[in-house]
Image 1 (cartoon, rainbow, N blue to C red):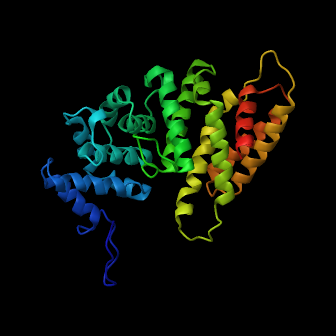
Image 2 (cartoon, rainbow, N blue to C red):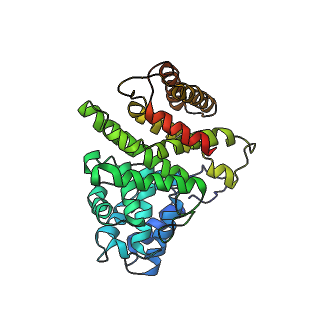
Length: 330
């Protein structure tokens, strides 16, 4: 964001440097007319730059997020008819990346994007759903008890993991794996919070579909296996196998544990459950040694411990089914 400076003075941050790309884009968006190509492509560039979390944090400290919210709210076109690379499309991408990184500057965003989530089943509705998850929309406000959001984000998580798109909806490089897993983790956290408030294990079961949980296991294991194999070189593979995505997947599993560890009624012993607990415990211990986050190390170790404790208990149908899907898919 900030150009190189000479050795004569201290290096200025992008926010301090009036000649930084951030300040130039801020000036452009503040003074260019909303309907012009310059204004639209400025938001296109901002949407791209904000894919990097450090850039998103800086953008959040400017007046740009407010303008992106206005771009969406002032649109006279239905979200389902927004064209790729339109001002609205760029602005919603920007809001998505900002919401993933920070809530700074996003006051009023929920009121604008929630109707899009409810009324659009395409890419704009998917982006709006993830923004709502990042901005901690209460679980009960997601349509159809969270079923639609859980399915759409889980599908996106699988497609980004496999590096494939969805025909006529999004391409294989429209979303990062980290963003998809982060949105799923945010939804899982919202479901867990709703269950905690009602002392139940209802909403986490919506998120803990065996196909989705198996995918989380696959992501955690794959990232642990791939992370660090490039000796520090920043390649596309490094970018895809982002350890942050693994960290977020661990957090999602942690939120879903009440559903995954719910015993069958009536209780019965199961060799399948014992095997699942033993194998998955090893995966989480292995991941805890790869991540640099102290908090995630603790979470992964706690998940491994709870799995080990559950191995000798009653059958755990959801966990067993999720493990079987993951095990047979690897």
